[in-house]
Image (cartoon, rainbow, N blue to C red):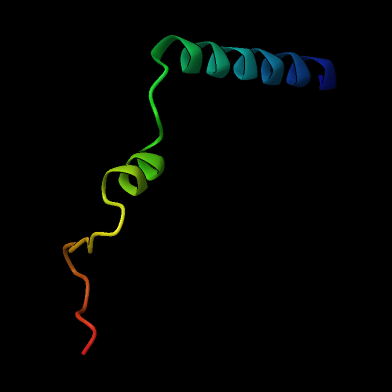
Length: 50
């Protein structure tokens, strides 16, 4: 049973890296910091500092 658990875990790891290399997109966190450098981002629900 433990062996099957490890095989499924390895298969999921390989599939996730395969899809990551296929789509090759940047993560949203990195894009926000890249495109909004030195700019204030107003988000919904955020409280303004006084």
